[in-house]
Length: 313
Ligand code: MG
Image 1 (cartoon, rainbow, N blue to C red):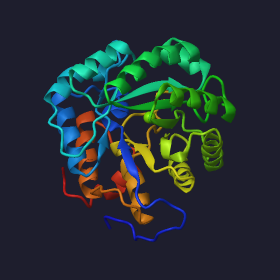
Image 2: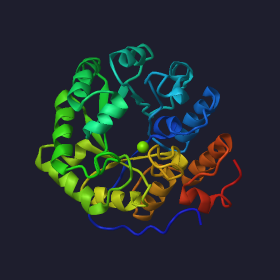
Image 3: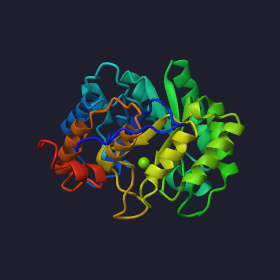
């Protein structure tokens, strides 16, 4: 059985945009670095499987993310599929220069809802990181680019523990104030639960950041990603981040699952009768192929369940 029985549920969106993060967030968190040729084939296969937004790479300094040190080469050689968007992560002004030189039309910046993670990940306070992003977003918008703001640690922080909703709302409003078109709410450690998702989306909406401006980025470390996704959809969110095959382990819990797998998400959405445009069999074949290149099995339940049913990659 390659697809679930379609039984719609009331109160959900008609269609959902899947924001595929495997090539960036997935591969940057894998211990194995794959060659640029494999990445290019991966991007092509994801687009061919029907994914309309594929975050391609990152211009973070190679010292911090050696897995994506080939960002320039990758983008120069990428043959964009018609109608597919290829956003890239840009940390600062210099990263934006590199992205613009390669004709990038859409960028993402990576902020934190907590001071500890801002310090550890960006070596800056929240205020300092927003000051770093301000000219990047302003210049990107002036160049006509779309800008997404990632907001990590929205549901819990490994060093600080609980993260108060008003604190997340405060940083979210400041990112929107800088000019971000969309915010992606990250459960970076995977500890959130559905009521928390509902409460955060409601609080953001009351603060003027409606669900049409939001995406959700869940990690499945504690097995909550799909339940949290359903809560987000019920709250009106229509963009969901996921990673093909569940690529990218959890950097804060060794041997634990990280990103929500795109296949698991697609199974649920199709079962709910929500359009995604994704060919699930083609996507599973892609993840099996990538798992071979990484020398390990995909952590995705759907990939494992369908592995025998799809033709070998
Ligand atoms: Mg992630």
